Image (cartoon, rainbow, N blue to C red; front, side, top):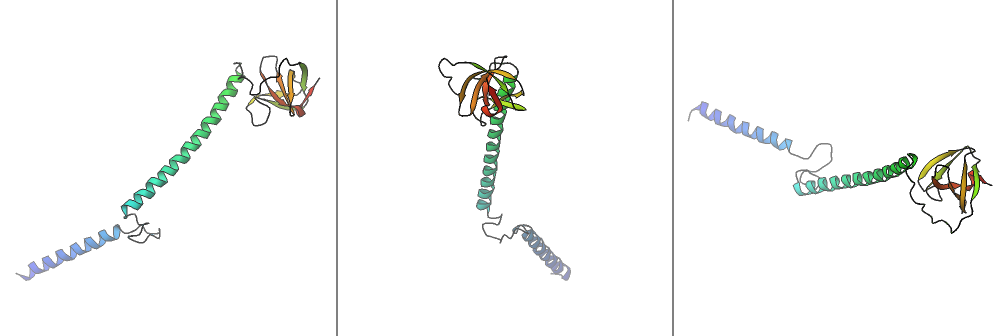
Length: 165
């Protein structure tokens, strides 16, 4: 064989080694992650990488579903308030009325008072009443007053914000 042919073969082998070296450098663990090649953190360890990726994705999607369910609950409450404000009949009271209530009149003494669907601040706000708004009182219970307005809406207001006559 001639000298030129040997040089071509040597240069070809050297080129293959160079390509192999560069390819090897490209597939080692991601720099800056602290992953050791061949360890469970190395993305080339396919099963652990896929398991981690799937686990992270499932956790993320689970959080998204929880957030969406919370948003759905919030929007359901908003729709109920909007429907109540449009004049649609209010939902039935959460607490059963006492038999044959004695009605009295009442008036808001605070700057404003929120009328709610039940006796407590955890219940849905139906409407905000202004100072001096009058209403019919149906029941008093645990610091709350069940009332009805002239437009037919019924609900509960805090007894500390009203005067029952």
